[in-house]
Image 1 (cartoon, rainbow, N blue to C red):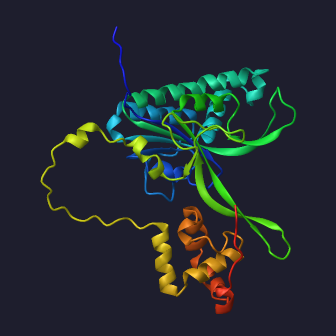
Image 2 (cartoon, helix red, strand yellow; image 1 turned 90 degrees about the vertical axis):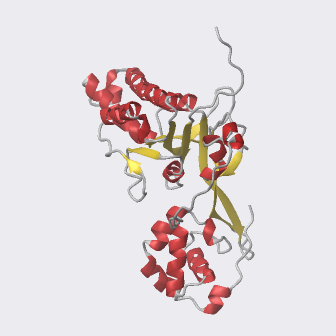
Image 3 (tube, one colour; image 1 turned 90 degrees about the horizontal axis):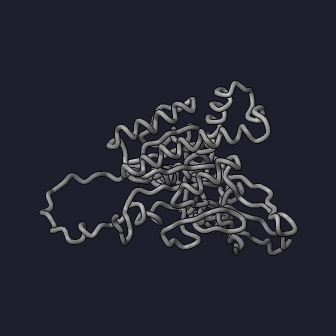
Length: 336
């Protein structure tokens, strides 16, 4: 029998969950060479590789088996999202049991069958991991009333939008469970003393909290930026061989043009139509989307693309209605 010491390198099983629109699909797309199983059509506007949209539970299983049989097709497999995949699994379970509803199996039986069927997917994904392919699973989150049996009172907490049988099973399976949310800013009106919340910075929570579930096995800080850069060293660790390898002679290579981000596109539109930073931030703040002091680069990419760029002509007309005095007016200072 052989005893192995030290860390064992391998692919990562990552689970991201959070409210809709926060950017779960976007961060998954930044993993090495991703291939999406897009159950809800959330990647339509993204330049990524994807299977045809699965319409049945068997389609999802077939996609994973294809990756198993063709391990060179990607370096990361993304299941986006788990809760939509569970809906297909529920439909499959009911059709197989010849019932109309998961409750029709009898007390608790339907959810046992559902758990067994979903576990087959997780087992297949584990086999993909063994081939050195990362697996990323995303899920939506929702608020649920939670009451501990040994405590008085109840409180709200964030949980994945999954059944109570499937949700815990995915969390146990994953190496890291990261909860994404907005760190909200609160401003106070100097005159009325009323307080108002404004959309803030996106962050990821990496450890358990009474109000959400999270975990990691890599020593991450409890709260980190919601970006791939924050976990890149875990997903793409530097090997010793890379440090000791003799440098090769560099050959002249064509300079690849960096793809434009939504922020680059927005800046081009602003310059074209004569919209200054101050005017744009003033117009956005009057809509109640972001406080005036928040920088444009801190806006959510989805907000920039869907609410500004996609509706630019109308937004320009709205932004130009304000006078220079209104635009230059000092905003009230927010605090956390």
